[in-house]
Image (cartoon, rainbow, N blue to C red; front, side, top):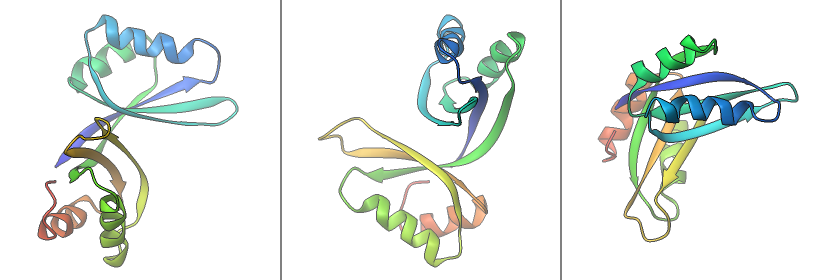
Length: 135
């Protein structure tokens, strides 16, 4: 399934990440998954939230630089080797992965959610569905 990912530019200074997440919390936007890529001066907070429109509005209303990107969401069994199987399947079919992050509810959880930014969402979706993954 294609899902919206909200990317937010965050200065790499003390308290900036807290300020962004507090804006979302005050607006009652739930962060479902996240990843942060950073450099010395700034970071990109990538989040999947329960209300993309509300998140984008509150962030832009507070002068944050925001971009929404379609990413692939994959449900997979929470077992050793399943992630490797997903990325091998994509690699063997010529699908490049720009980045990925995942969430598992901890040891003993039956499944995990994988977020993938790939070069071809439609082809990746077809490949993963044909292999039995819930996309």
